[in-house]
Each structure stands twice: as C-alpha cells, then as structure tokens.
Image (cartoon, rainbow, N blue to C red; front, side, top):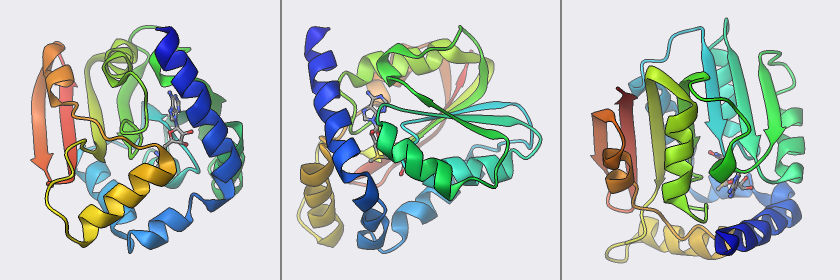
Length: 208
Ligand SMILES: C[S@@+](CC[C@H](N)C(=O)[O-])C[C@H]1O[C@@H](n2cnc3c(N)ncnc32)[C@H](O)[C@@H]1O
C-alpha cells in the first residue's frame, strides 16, 4: 500500500508542476483524444440526468463534455492535483452542475453505490495501483450503473506515429499504461463494449 501512496504523491507533484502544459498534449495527439472522449460518451448511452463521476478529471476536457450532456444531473470530477483542478474550474465555469473534488482514485471519498455512471478517460494509465482504482470505481457505482474507461495499454506494440506519441506521452506524464480488462472482468459486471485500439483500450461495463 505505501508503495502506491508514495508513487501517487510523485504523480500529483508532476501534474501540479505541469498543469498549464497539459492541454498541449491534446494538440500533440492531433485532436484524436477529444474525438475519443466524445465517442466514449456516445457509446455509454448516457442520459441527461443522474450522478456521474469523472475519475482523474484533470483539466476538465472530459468533465465539460459530461456536464453538457448530463444537463439535468450532477457531474463530480475528482483528481489528485490541485493545479489541474484550477484549470478545470476555469475551463468549465459555465457548467453549474459540475463540481470538483481533490482526492485519490484508489481511496474515493464517496459512499457505496452513489453514482449512476463512472468515467475515466486517459487516466487509469497514470494511476499507481489500477486494480485498487477499478474496485473503488465499482464500489461507488450503483447496481445497473455503467463504468466507462479509455486508457493507453502497457504494451505499446510496433512503432508507428501513434505508438511513438504514446511512448513520449508515457514518459512526460508517468502514464505507464494499464491493461484493465482482467481487473474489470473480476468484478460482478456484464461487459457491454470492449475495443482494442492496439495502443489503447475502451471498456464499457454494467455493474450487476
Ligand atoms: C493524463 S491526465 C487525464 C485527465 C483527463 N481525464 C483527460 O481526459 O484529459 C491524468 C490525470 O490523472 C490524475 N491522477 C493521477 N493519479 C491519480 C490518482 N491516484 N488519483 C486521482 N487522480 C490521479 C493526474 O493528476 C492527472 O490530472
């Protein structure tokens, strides 16, 4: 346990230092990350109400999309870094249904079965102890709720332009990559969508 706490502290410090640079990353990926976030939301069949949790909310690129979509509900974005949350607040100030919490995904400050949907885009690959993070995400999800995950895998495959980007990204952002399918399958869930994009994977599952 202490290992992941120490590593998470280093990750937090890095994101605090580099918060203002994080959005350059989307430019580097030529818009493909924002496109993928939108696709994940569409594939999740999200309604316009309910309680939604955005894990590793960062500078709020996904949180803003979610708040717009869930206009009659509430979105909570949680992140370990105070400075990325400041950017998140500035970016999304027009969404009054979006709230931000500083906290750690491996130990979520919410009760069991609080949320209808839990999202995590481009974040599980940064987390130390992803298995713990997945079980926490499922703990706070209501029965019949949906978990939607999109992240880089640890095996980056043969070198091409996206592969090169993913290695560079992993180096800058401590995004080692995560292979979450077995962790999600261990839980009491029905898999709705699994997409393998070679360097990344998308998982949508319903809690039973
Ligand atoms: C690559 S960014 C992704 C941000 C956002 N989800 C997106 O789609 O752009 C990863 C974020 O995870 C956060 N993070 C890393 N480890 C965390 C942890 N254990 N708990 C909460 N947030 C964490 C970082 O502070 C950073 O903002």
